[in-house]
Length: 145
Image (cartoon, rainbow, N blue to C red; front, side, top):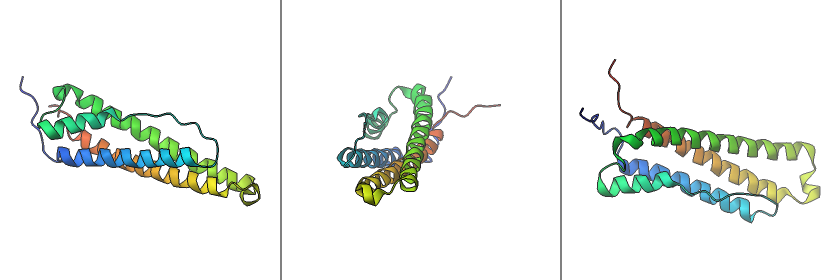
């Protein structure tokens, strides 16, 4: 059986750039959250998919062949959902703080502003991850019906 042809709609370099932009947005968001004058608990996650994209750009072949195309595709979907949920929850939290508390009297307005900036970058990371998801869907093998 011959492998499915590469459709070449999106360059691997463009996919790598979009994933790097996602990573940069999330790193800046993480830095903002950890340096905010408030208590926040964040875990450090690494982006393994970016390493696979670097491999594809440098060698011209996909790591693991076409078998990892589905992992790329569904991984992008999961990451997009997590980022959208995180951004929405953060926006909701800051809005609740503004509605329920007098943030200027409590002295946490700087923290709220930094949290909004981090949520905005998380949302931007979601957008880049969504674009990456669309790009990875182009690599899925086409089924013949």
